[in-house]
Length: 491
Image 1 (cartoon, rainbow, N blue to C red):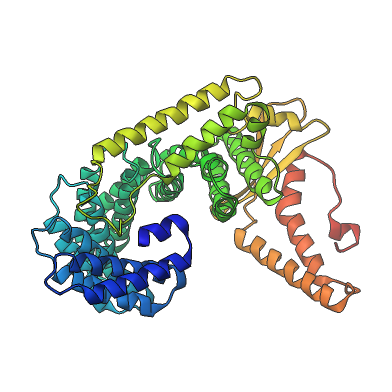
Image 2 (cartoon, rainbow, N blue to C red):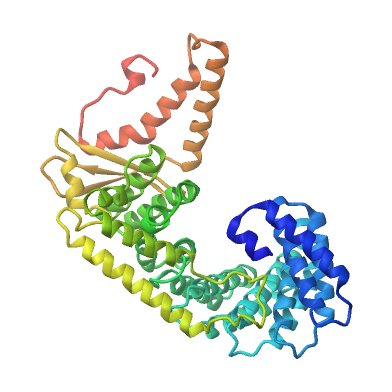
């Protein structure tokens, strides 16, 4: 019933299913072999409705039904681990909602039993381990017991080992392991844990398979941790991140998903540019900033995307690329609430092989597209040498404001060189403060229906922008100017 609702999304069908299961459960005797299955399906349906409507009473009923389903099924039954997994997920959800540590303990117990009863060769074993690892880490975050974090790392390492390369869940397994290593490094300060976190996140981000959003998040974590070393490896991390941006935003994504990603992409790109500037890669920083600017503003202004341009000239290739992208993005293992021994899951290796074939197909389509005239840089950042051509009538200045550092990059006419001007007086916190001041001023102006006669607040903002940004750039360009205060007028 829950699976039918998942396919249709019609809430009424879910309600009808729950009613039918309640009636069936009332007629099935306790000792009947179908009693546990009926209770399991009923509990899963209540859980799905809880996720849809957020009514905690549904979650209570889900747990009650799933507990009875577990009690009525013997340990040797092949469906027992799945029913324990469902119960553990429901206890985990109730902990997240109500914060009762007893629910988290119950989740750990159920998931430990599911792991014990599932052989390593079973396709569900890695997912059982991932669920258990998540509960251990959540309990560590709540109680601070380092033994829970050690257990989380142990079971997550097993999940990584049992998941073959090419499987869509592998990046997620590695990301979970990286998060746990990072937590232990922050707690104990052991450099081996930092190395483990960096290694896990890089292995999660680099493969061509797995959900792009998971790999993007791992690339960002990888880059952030490289600042702790510090290491030029950070450029590899940010290069991976920037290459993933088109997949995260443009290809095979809904409009809602695109807008959801804009903010974190903007922050990540300015940090990437700051890292490139730190290592003297000014051209690379410019390329990354242009990639981020074109995506963020393109989405905000609803401009045409590269996929729209491709579809206009090569519609067949655009459709092929989007279809394969959606297949790659949707691949992965979610808890199968209606799983039973009647429908045996596909082996992990077969899933990995199929996913690798899709990834190879994506690369082949992309290579074919890049052989078309005018599409050689499709889904790639523009090269800095082509960006330098924007400085036709005079210098072009690009300001990058990151929490790491703030800088200006300057393009000059008839030059392929990108110049760099540090802006040490500029702080991201100061810019955010000025932004808030302007927003408040605008709201006050609208409320009064007229601008104030003398806006000292605006003058102060403009003066700071002059001192922190404009003056250092003009000094670098050796341009003569009047300081606004010396000239005799406050801006």
